[in-house]
Length: 306
Image 1: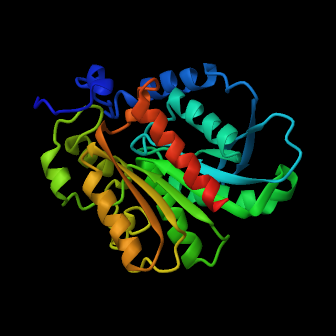
Image 2 (image 1 turned 90 degrees about the vertical axis):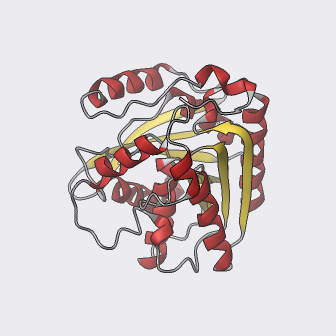
């Protein structure tokens, strides 16, 4: 394995990889689900689990996070977690969400979309779009300001968030005010320089990324997969403004940069942040000053649009 000059805050993760073998996924997801459920929300944040209609005849769960005793209508961030389209949310996602809730302040709807390979594209993405529609239909009861609804996600969740924006535009669906994309997956073609270079980086690499797409898309012969692979969209016009963050030693870095440029070329406002010395999923190092600074930048971006 090549040694990369990653920041000292992330050195202890340099030999870790995210397992996505289909044989291991059931066990991995049980462990992740238990860990997430055991993690308590931050003091002052409440967590409410609700079941809503998903894609087709399915039902999915969402979790509403909000400040305790909130009486006023607040903006809402609909968040799609990362995990290669096949893994449940990690416990650190709950910590991040609570920081967005408390610091912005806003409410967060966290979507437990269905996972591949059992549920191939577009099931998980359509679940996320259903969650967007549900928030708009029920925003008044939830204390959500429907004029200030954003979507966000990290890694595969970033692809889902970007895909939901494209779908909402094309279907003339609910208006999304903002998209927050954290080291997002954006391109199934695997053709960027960083995808060719970072084949053995910590936590995530190009080899795993190729396997991820196989698990997500399966053997579908879908010539138009732009909702899955947002950089392949025919047009980027009329999409929401974006905050987009990439990590330096990440195979997804260059496709994130290209997506930011595609949005800008279409006249969309983009705040692009290139973190240095970082790896994919670097928020796992929750004591790192780099992580704290990144979260503060995201909060500032949300405050500005809300």
